Length: 322
Image (cartoon, rainbow, N blue to C red; front, side):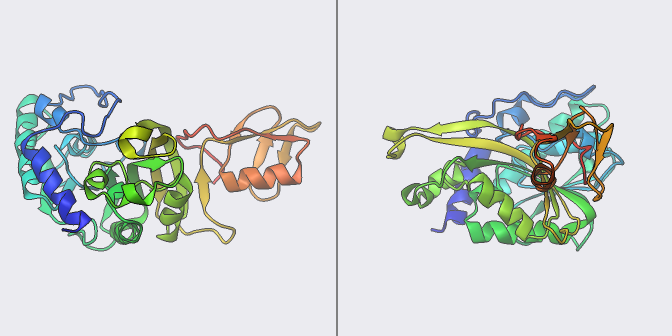
């Protein structure tokens, strides 16, 4: 049995018998006016963070959600689109689609603004999304892509790039590893299905996104997710997994490389009222300005005594240099 077959079997089981602690989600579901999340849907909240960032969802976007789970985030996305077919949710596991459909029916009774046809459930997988090229504004996935082996991850990222409109956004939440995961854990198919052994390091993860063609990546949150202990997982030392929420934009990669925002700022402290690097970045004296990692490195190099570059905060919500 392949790891994908093991994963399908595993999620068929947890669709029929919800496992509340499966992904160890610690964050409170997004609170929005008049949004009621059914208990059955919350019990199937199989994710490691969130992909629903209101600032990304202006203008009633067309959303494609990959791996529907219990339907929680599909419902949250529908809150912003509010029209028939505004959200398409794709899942290869029939039992999961059936459970999500039941949960969405309950949600329609509990939320006066919501109708079941706001979410279209389709059979399909991340490697062959059942929508045309350049047809959606947002693709989202929560704690799914980390299950894939690296080359399959690249296939899934390429497929999301295909279906996004120019300027569209890939919103993801996945575990990442603070160091490479040992081979004996990577080869454990059930641990991979449980989101515990397929995670890449941060550097590897972002590199795959850029290789798929995304020219800008923004880190929305990075926080502890799980600790793999020595005894249970046969490790020399404990291994921390983190949850990474990110947004990748389908924009061209600049000649000098992609823009990766990790929450860095640049602060000018020289004698003039402002600093202009001649490349579109103007820093007012004493005022922090959000910059991508690439720009931060360049500014630090050209005026190291006059410009302070602060470390990554691993949180960024727009308004930067690019």
